[in-house]
Each structure stands twice: as structure tokens, then as C-alpha cells.
Amino acid sequence: MQPGSRSVEVLIGPADLTVANRLVIEEGEEVISISRIRVADHVPMALEHTNLPAALVSGLEDIDLSVQSLFDRLELKYRIRPTSAEQKISACTQNLRWLSLRGTLLKYLWVCFSKLGFC
Image (cartoon, rainbow, N blue to C red; front, side, top):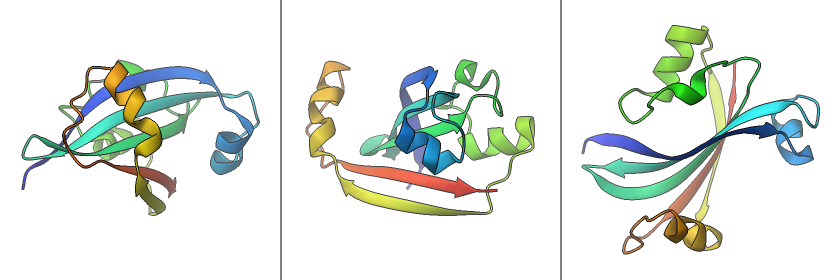
């Protein structure tokens, strides 16, 4: 299977308390929030949300992550190399309306990934 992704939304905004605690930054600091559909052989498999401190990855919001790996970009441009991660997998029932509003086909079984990486 050929892995891939399609960016659905990339936003810059203030970190809420939950995101700030997970990233070990101050509440209100800017974060880049990336929502991507993960695919295998072009078939949607999962919805992935990634939050990164904006101060560490300036300009990341302008990069097309459907043609380049996020982790490759972090390492090559920003010299950030995650060495381990915690990942939570769950059903995406709370995100089905969000996906449909963005024109994504919902005929597939969806799972959500929430990942916290450590450098």
C-alpha cells in the first residue's frame, strides 16, 4: 500500500489549555493546527490532527504536505526530529459533520489519530 495524505485545513491560532499543556507551552501561544486525511493507495483511512508550536515551525503553513512528509519537512527545514511519540486512535464520530462540511466523502470507515511527539 502506498501511504499519503491530503491537507484539509491548516490554521494558526492561540493554543487552548489542553493543547498548551500537551505541547508544554503557555496557553495562548500561537500554534499551527494541521488536519489531514491519511490515505492508503489513495483511499481515505483516517483523519489526523497535528498541533505544533508556531514559533518552532515558521512558514510550515505554506508547505503542501500532500507531496512531502511532515516528519521529513520538520527534520530537513527546521532540524526537528521527533524521537518518540504517543498516539491515540479513536472512532471519528465527532468529526463526521466537520468532514462533510469540507466536501470529504464519508463512505469510508474513519479513525482519528491524535499524536504527541517528543524531541
